[in-house]
Image (tube, rainbow over all chains, first blue to last red; front, side, top):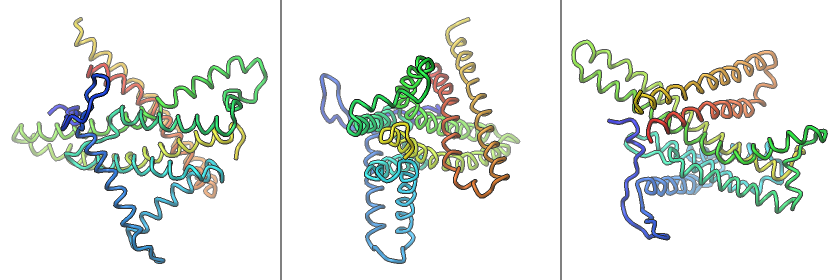
Length: 249
Length: 74
């Protein structure tokens, strides 16, 4: 089996067409629907009891809520808290996508650059709209750091380029991490199958890559959480810059 | 040299970017540990910066890996 085969997209049903391009309901769309349903059901059912002493599910929901709220508050301050629903939705969506991708035979939504770039573009769009809504044309001061004028000749282009590459780095980070991790798992899975089929001593040796797969699986679970966290914290940092420019909150 | 061989060599060369990522990630965690062991009280407040540095570091290396994958699979 080819290691990249797991990322192939299958069309299930044709929905409609836009300017001659057919829009399909694919296995990726199916997984995204499953993820959104699972996340919403988990959050609503976990909080359904509203007990003072939380049950296990309720404390999971509360911990994730407080985690994101703390993250947002420490990086953007009080006036950033109105973006909490946005950041929380992003975090939970990316987290659930990453974890659903870890289930064997399922599909990793975040290993598609189309998905991650859409998310990153949405984040940057929100940042730009927030910045212009709050500061007006003064938002452009974001590109002018406090420095002598002769350094600004060098610094302003660097700031502009670094702002423009943000959607690319934000999306490619998530996409490349997921792609590389799942490819690695498939490659080691191929080792197990090939060694196991070879017969004799080689079949016994195939236990080694199998144990390695378990270790890599643990690492991938960590990476799945970490990338969702990084995506959310970078969103917070970009929002903070849009809200407060270069001053700290 | 035919195109397929050149592609393989190019993809291998693009993966050299991961050397830098490895050095960078090692540096991030090493510096964090040496700082955290000297001042354990401040360690917990810096985990955000630690993970951020880790992620930024890793991303630059992964750009190289993506180039390698693009060369191989297009």
